[in-house]
Image (cartoon, rainbow, N blue to C red; front, side):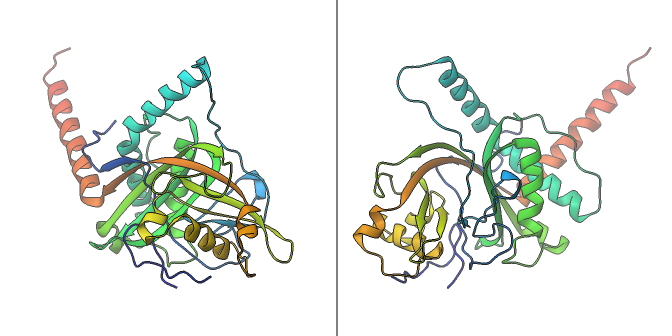
Length: 298
């Protein structure tokens, strides 16, 4: 079965930088796929150290995750703070993409880590996705459903998704000029009232279920997966059950028995060329600044 992530082949169903640099949007994230296994949470789950790590459509054998929950009802101080946080995140997402490129570039060239970025360091679940070439082929995608501080989380997953996605060989220096990075910040986790209580193209979904052998499993698809594949809601649920390891016949009762959590995301894209433009602008600015200081008499 082919990997699928933001424009690659469709699956077959079996039973402080300006936002103009890079492309930012709400409710869009990447997806990839992989086979089940026992190491890490690369398309499956790992609750060691109470942190979940997933590659685009993660599967888990069980355990718990920490989610950011949306409040309901009247406006509260907490909700107002959440709205301010969301605006701060949206306004900083191209900075996050730039930071991921900085981290990877310096890692590949054996340079020291970049300075701490200026954008918010609030905790969020997040994904970092690398794609390559004009056709934007998936090159690595790993994230976490645990809320991590953005500075350390993006630094960790920029490297992990680029060099430690078990589905791919590590990204090399020769490839970096053809890369595009996507940062996805997951938000708005809510318990659904049923397996159809979510909206195609808007919500990512995470399901918990028991296999035909009684093992508890989880699996997730990020928001754009279903529409990219051309699936309806039921087809998406059935595919997710199979990806999570369910091998028995899928009946209406099977679908009704799952627990579904829905969520949304904010996403931003940046190409290597856009990243280099930002580096050049920074360099030009600092050179001008240094020149102006040199004319100051003390």
